[in-house]
Image 1 (cartoon, rainbow, N blue to C red):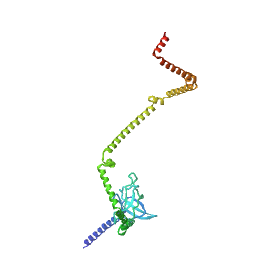
Image 2: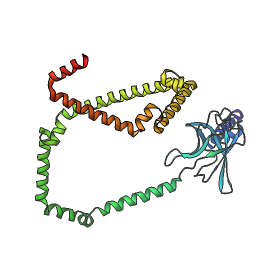
Image 3: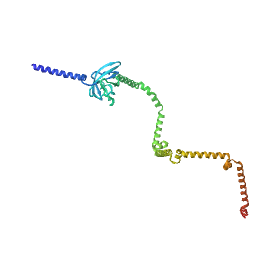
Image 4: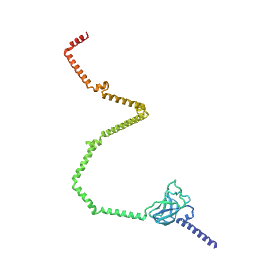
Length: 323
């Protein structure tokens, strides 16, 4: 009898211990006895977050919420992480919920892989989520707006809105019918290739012309590119001193010779302007010009006299001259 009582008592204690462990596990109390860093996050609103709620990264649990307390105008959430956690100092904490009636939890993103690992006392950045109550209030406002909109398009209001349009269609039914008939005729002509628009749409001439134009443009562009390449090569040759133009640009001696030639040509032109030399006198001496003009006049008269005397007279003159 005594052994039976002790057995029952032992089983009861064991069950109580198991139940206590399960309750602590569900409440997150077991995390207090595990090793791991404690990190913090400052939120504007805890959003019904409770101590013992899970801390997740990409849906995987990596810790539990250990404490929630006010700190100024913010809420400090302390999280106890597991020793093998992958959290770094650039991770961002967000309070999320699993469903409309689900449990809230703290979600951490991956941050930056090159950032240092979060240690005990690290304060993470946060991202605020809209409050569920505020979200439901907004949805209620949207639903009310949709309801008012549907009411505005029913009954007398819809009649007042469509009444003028109906009257307009009724009064201009003939004109509208004629307009649609004309549009139908125009589309039929376009389909059959009649008229300018029909030929423009249906015939291949414009298409072929456009292709030919594009081909010519491509050829022109290729020619321009070739010309630009040749011009670029010419500029490179000139810079390198190749060819006559290159030597003229880069060779100082040739430049000096050209300069001297220009100077000499200028001196010659100045002498001609002053009347120096035969060319200068020929250009500037009016007496020489008058003598040349008089000689040409005499030659012209002599030519006319020869034409009047005839060929025989010319021959006799030549004979007398020679003999």
